[in-house]
Image (spheres, rainbow, N blue to C red):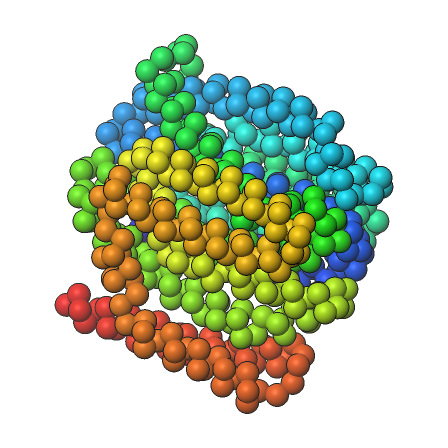
Length: 494
């Protein structure tokens, strides 16, 4: 089982590297072909599509409940649960489609800054994304079967293959002149292919069974209650700092949305990097909860993963702070000009506060396992409503830079409130978590920052090769840090 987790972690990072690296490489080409305005429209549609896939609402629900059944050894309960899940999420997909179609006539009022041509393109992209989401909603709910059995290798290989296919397809689609509509259609097609392959693996190779024995009122209430709070949390998160590009598009237009989206794209990749490991541990966390592990044990599990997260995230954050301006100039400066620096400031403003949230990502898994989502949803709902209202005013009166600063403040407010939830509702200890996670970092943060600064000062040039050389220096320093801390942890364990 541990080998599956290790292999899954490696494949997750390989897939993550492709999902981050490929768009970074292709973005200048896509931006050149589509132009700033249509690229902004494409990214608005792609952001919604990616967030619907990343939400993993049904997958998380199935993983959580199936892990409980497997811990108890209830195979018949698993099959009955899967039948109920498929039926319930089919209804949810129909509701999602109805709501989306209800919003469709008002897209012109929502985005008044779009030209007639831009609005026409976005209407097509919106409908494609909406229909895809409604169909995929019930299908994705069944892909948590492999996660509940902690089988990560085959799904990881499928994900890597689809990422490579997306990279090749993006180049070909644009080369054939299909533009943004073709790109979204191709992304939807590869998503469907990945789901079909995962379903075949779950039901043929893992021998999962689905049975329908009519509506079970008790199970339906429990499933609906958990799914309802999960759905609210996901919808609220979609309204939060990660979708500030929609507010920019509404108030400043598609061209300004491109500037904000470029910074947001780096932030989204950083967010993916931070959540890559945590998602593998939901079945284990469910097992801890079912077996009655104390809040102190759960806090310690959070801290252990938090330290690993910090080793990964901090060098990336420092690289963005010190070398991000050079990267954005090289990456999108040919189209955005001096506005590329604004995209960099947006990325920094979002990444820095989010780091403190991502290191405690396991807290989200603990909240799911203990079905303690109500307070978390209430806090994020309040923060999201505040974010939207203030963002609209900030964007209209002070522009993109002020919006980025406000987004950073919003992330910080939510982090503080969630720590209160961890303490009051879950019995976890945020102070102990941060003390264990950040132990010794008062020495290492200045040391890494000094290495990054020294590489910036002493490696000459302003092109890609100088950027890669500076990143190599910071990477070597970070690897040394990880090895030294790993040895220290091992000595303490002995």
